Image: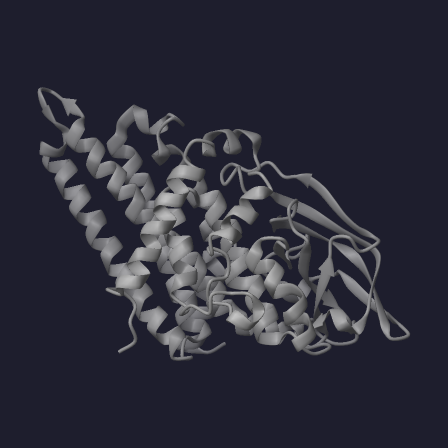
Amino acid sequence: MLAIENDPELEIFRNTIQQFAEKEFGPHYEQWEKDEIFPRDVWSMLGENGFLCPDIPEEYGGLGAPFMYAPAVIEELSRAGYASIAVSVNVHAMICAHYVLSWGTEEQKKHYLPKMVSGECVGAIAMTEPGAGSDLQAIRTQGKQDGDDWVVDGQKTFITNGQHCDVAFTAVRTDMSVKGAKGTTMFAIDSDAEGFGRGRNLEKIGLHASDTSELFFDGVRLGPDKIIGDLNRGFAVLMEELPRERLGIACQAVAACEGALDWTIKYVQERNAFGQSVAKFQNTRFKIAEMATRTRTVKAFLNECYQLFLAGKLDSDTAAMLKLASTELQDEIVDGCLQLFGGYGYMMEYPIARAYVDSRIQRIYGGTSEIMLEIISRGILGR
């Protein structure tokens, strides 16, 4: 049985994250949400304290820690209500860094990974386009070969870390004569490349401090050394890494549920109505009991998927089930918790209000709930 919980060293690491976040983020987070971006030096702070890519091998600058240290960072940030930072770290550390580690050349690993561990280089995933969301085969960003180089033109949108990113791992059509699944290549496009452009920081209903942008590629010239994986095999890279991506989203969701429940349990015990604690009302007690039970149930599924992932057995169907179950639950739990706060739950001074708007995107990015249902049903019933 692989250790998921009850690891004393991992618990110490979690406590360190909690203390760091409370000290460094707590006093400033509300302002960052109003600014709709957190400062660039947050990445360096996270890196200096070992909270970025802790599972990356020591030879590439990481701690060489077991895998569970990476989601632990995301879980603790999510549980504490710092969802904007959690999602940005998830994209950078759980996804982008592992594109390089799993699919990059030795030169690419040595170039990118130490800087990603330190926070000097921030990663983004550039897949979604104005006309291609969950349907990745419909992307139009195109690369044309010019000698040994590739010249990339196109546009991406809804890119997390879009304002801060130093490298965008970008899905590009490199063979228009075949379907997207067979003619797509992943490129590492540095933000200082000529022809790379950023749009404005997009306004969202939640996750305000997490920067989200359009990216533009106008004749960006890339050498073959910028290909991640093999030419025209980018779709395989994306598909192989999707279980990890959905695992990261699920760990955000479950931890957010636990955080919301913690706040709510404390609130209903302190709040009085009709001469008694709100926690004394049967409706409150039953609602809390139900939400705690459902959260624990999905957490058990999350822990099962951690075990499967560590054993190299987390398949795309199971990851889709986890993503669907956890993110749908998150919306329901946060909504139920907000209800128990009453009118105060609608006030942004209470973290439950922010958690409510932050949760909604979880059912959309990383593949919508409807796409998850399609994947799951295909696995059970066939196409």
